[in-house]
Image (cartoon, rainbow, N blue to C red; front, side, top):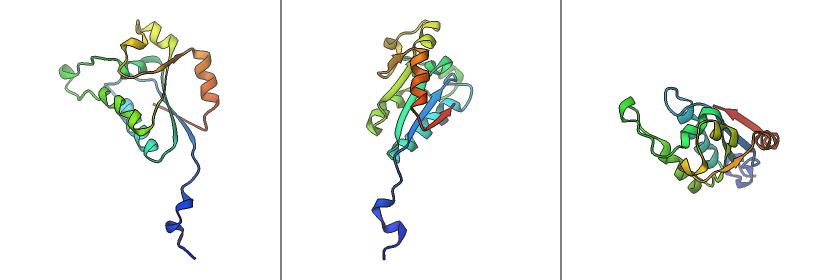
Length: 131
């Protein structure tokens, strides 16, 4: 009989995780922590969806200059998500519009969806973590 840690079939089921980003990218640790948790979940081959709402849309805006606030600009890391098979990125249309932004202003390709569609997408998830 093999030991449990030797059994390749003990990798658990794939779960549907949604990470909801609502905070501006700098001034708190939420945005960076969210990104780190997403990368960890992806490394464990979970079904990862990333959503940006409210000020969270600023996390993926092109051309961030953080020199004056003395922190590292981590927005380019979002471009690496595809390499981790994190390809489901959604932005709430109303959040973009109220901030005068469009999908062309973002560092990664996203699907822009309405608030109602975002609620429907959230209903499909098994686990939702909000940052």
